[in-house]
Image 1 (cartoon, rainbow, N blue to C red):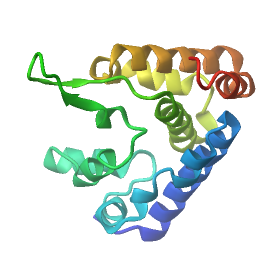
Image 2 (image 1 turned 180 degrees about the vertical axis):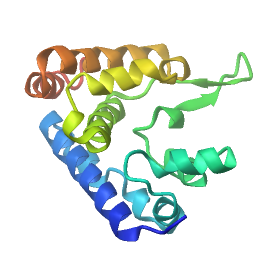
Image 3 (image 1 turned 90 degrees about the vertical axis):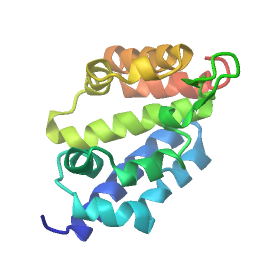
Length: 177
């Protein structure tokens, strides 16, 4: 296994820049500016360099090797745009369950997913890719149903109407949807 600090830095910087631009288009400027800063912390950056492959998140490689990813656990606990952050102990069931994400973090999550698809798909990216990734995974079953429904609606809009119309819709309906 080799160590790729420059390649990892460039990948996370390109991703962060894309998310930032998407957030700006959606009207959530501050979220764009602070997006994924924890990826530059030693806890995440060193492991990202160690498990860098270029075509997927280094967290996936780390998870394959050890059954978990220390970098991911650090990341999801500090970044409110990840639905995994939004779980809490239900006082009635005494179980940890998903809770609805506030819209601002849901929008940042949408921007993050679009940017990640662009980075990892490269020239093969289409506006359908983020929706396909969402439908292929099991995220819906681990999100609050309101959060999952809103995210899927935005991903469908992106697929059917494109970026410009979807970002405009989000910006104009930030508080309502």
